[in-house]
Length: 286
Image (cartoon, rainbow, N blue to C red):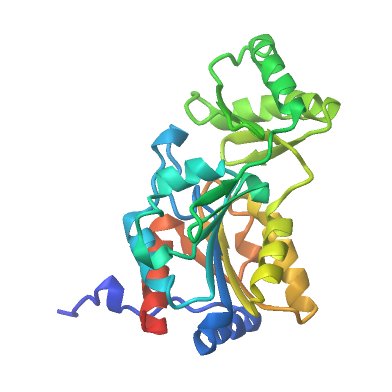
């Protein structure tokens, strides 16, 4: 009978593109000048019905704890409020993540482990105005059971708990987009969610700033949803200009495959990403 190789000893899945392979080689060759940035929901943490019950995969956070001292920078780049990501992620009691940064609300907020301080600007007034109008809109559409998540700088409509989440999201898309536009905001589609937020910030701008601040020459970015597309676009542009080597990792799901054809490497959900991070730690000797 053929022996099954334990996952920790299995070979690390290889990037499928030359650019991705070159970026991974650059990370291993000069980890002090490398940046590892990751989304939160659907990437580090499995998607769950109640956003407050989300938790980072335990093997993923353990792998990051190993990787942190080896790399120039590890960052979480998320649409979550920064303090929510910190609380749900369990990052602040990990000694290996003493230089971690969390960029919350798509980069509008920031928490740094080195100082323990969070920079949280006040939310746009338009968000509160939209929040006040959404209950009536939902009732008019017969979708009063849609859950609203108030994030300060954004409000999220969750359809996951409904009998037909995709149909509910389809019906909401036009009216919510119109309401958002009327207040100078954007309505962004996601995995059984629509998020109304300030369009002046996104993960692409956040990553560009982080690369400039750290001087990183190699970047690994992992994400799973449409909110990660600006990060992909920014890194592809920087890669084409010769500014960085970049490895784009898609954390794939049946709900949202959009990142897969744009990626250098696809993994199957947070579980397989945790596997990949463990093997990266092994390869770095961390």
